[in-house]
Length: 496
Ligand code: BES
Ligand code: MN
Ligand code: ZN
Image (cartoon, rainbow, N blue to C red; front, side):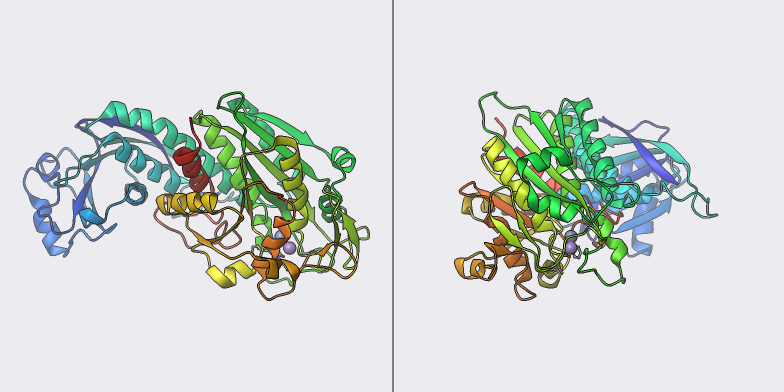
C-alpha cells in the first residue's frame, strides 16, 4: 500500500487521530507527550521493557493503552538535542512515514523539553514524509498478497507552536518534494519510454508553472554547429533535443543563474560498447538533466525570487551503422575540435555544446552543470558524496555549504593546467578521453575548456543520482540528488 499524505498543522491533535507519533530525546524520561496521548502512563513501562532509550531515529511502536484516544503510539527517538540540525527534521518525517503503515489518521507531537516545534521544523517533518512516500511502481501490474497497490489518503496533523508559519513554510516544502519526486521519476522511467523527445515533453510541462520552455531540435542544433552533441546522437534512431527552461522570478535586469544537465536517456557506450553487466543502470544516465528539471520545477512552484535557466542536453548513445567511431574528429559549437577516443565518454560531448550555448546565449552569473559523468567518481567517492569541480572558490564554497545544510554532500576535487594537458590530442584541439587515471578530473578539465571566464561548477553525480543506499527520506533507485542541494544554494545566496 502506498500513501498520499494530506498534511495539516495545528496546535493540538484531534481526538479521533488513530496513530500518535511522539518524539523523544535520549535521556528524557518518560517519552515526551505522554500525558495527552497516554494518560495511564503505560508508555514509560513499554519504553523500559523494550529498552527504548530515544536513540536517534529509533522507533518504539506499541498498541495504545485503554483510555487513550489513539489506537497506536509510535515514539521516535531524536538522539541528543544539541546534535539536532534541520536535516534531522526531514529524517524524523521519513521515519514517521515509515511508521504509519495502515493508519489513516496520524498526529505527530513533539513535546520534548527545550525543543520548540516551530513552523520551519514542522514543515521539514512534512517534507520528510513526502520524500519518503515516493515509490516507483507504475509498472507493477500484479498485486502481491503483502503489497496492496491501492493508494490511500492519510490525514496527518503535525502539532506545532505556530500553525500559520508552518503552513507558509509548507508551500515551499511541497514545491521541494514535488521537484525531488519529479527528478526521481524521470530517472526511474525506462529508456524505451523516456527518450530525448519524451523527456523534452516532460520539460515542456513546466509551462504550467509559469516556466518558459523552448525546445531545440536537431535542425536548430545543426544550425548552431553543435557537432559534439550531434555526434553522440547520430547512432540512435531517437533524435536529440535540448530543452531550455527559463524561470523569471527575479528583477527583469538581473542576470540569470544557469543549471545545465547531462541527459543521456540511455548510454550503451556506443561503438566502444559497455559490458552487459548492469548496463540497464544506464537508463539513469540522464540524472543530471532530471535534477535540473526537478530544480526548475521547485523554483517555479515556490515562486523563487531569482532568474534561473535550466538547460538539458538530451540524447541516446547507441551503436549502429551511422554511429560515430573512435578516431572521428568533431567540431563543437565553440569551434574547438575534438578527437573521439572512446564513444563511451559521451557525456562531456553533450555538455560541452550545452555549456557553450548557455554561456553565449544567456551570459549567466554562473553555470552549474550536473552529470552522471564518470565511473571513476564512484571509485573515488562511492555514493555518499558527489564530486565538485570549480573554477571559482566563492561558488565552490557556497555549494559546499549548501551540501552540508541539505545533506546532499559534495567533495571538492582538483583542477589544474597539468591535468588539462592530459586531454591534448595529436590530431585535434583535444581528445574526449584522457584514459583511466584521474578519469573524473580529466573529464572535468574537458568541460572547463567550454566555460570561458564564467564562474562554473561541475557536479559529477554518477555515484549519487541513482542506486545509493536507501535512507529515511529516500527509498527510490533514482534519488533526485541535486534538487535540494541547488534549491538550498539559490535560497541562501541568490534570492532578492
Ligand atoms: N555514463 C557513464 C558514467 C557512469 C558510470 C555513470 C557508472 C553512472 C554509473 C559515462 O558516460 C561513461 O561511460 N564514462 C566512462 C568514461 C571513459 C570512457 C573515459 C567511464 O566512466 O568509464
Ligand atoms: Mn558513457
Ligand atoms: Zn554516460
